[in-house]
Image 1 (cartoon, rainbow, N blue to C red):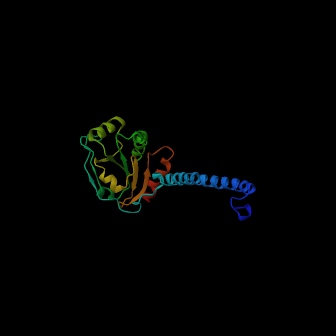
Image 2 (cartoon, rainbow, N blue to C red):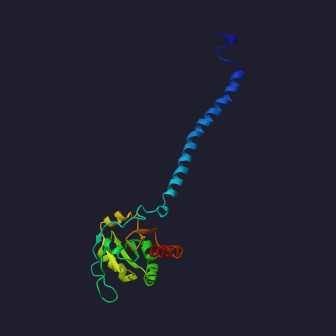
Image 3 (cartoon, rainbow, N blue to C red):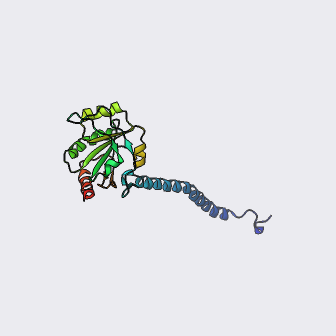
Length: 207
């Protein structure tokens, strides 16, 4: 077949097709990299958006779920009286209740505990504890070591009440209005930085 018949093309044609082919290969090679980078960016965005501290509780504005948690056996207050357990009807008693979900195995719980002792002394609201997925002996030892700021402590060894409250992880703290309505949810430990805003939520619940 002759060159005029268009058999294999001229060397000049091959010179033109070579760079074009390389560009196409480069573009095709770059597509997986771009897709991977896009997925990484999407993952980072979703990860930030999934920060539980930024997610409002589905219970905000609704009645606290029904539960009846037994007392922590052997736990006594400063006067030597048994500290009662915690039940949902207790949270509709006409005053604001702050419910702190904690566990002896939770390191951030230890970090925030001094703040709980501080706000427990302020008065104006009831401070209750929910011992989450913890052994009673460990819970009692924790409060004996670090102090007990709670007027009531309910034990939730299986975490069922925590599930009803939508607890993501400990510690979490809920502000319950005088009518038993969940007004605010604090995810993660209270800190000196977050405490003023949290106490404002407590005051708003009282109003």
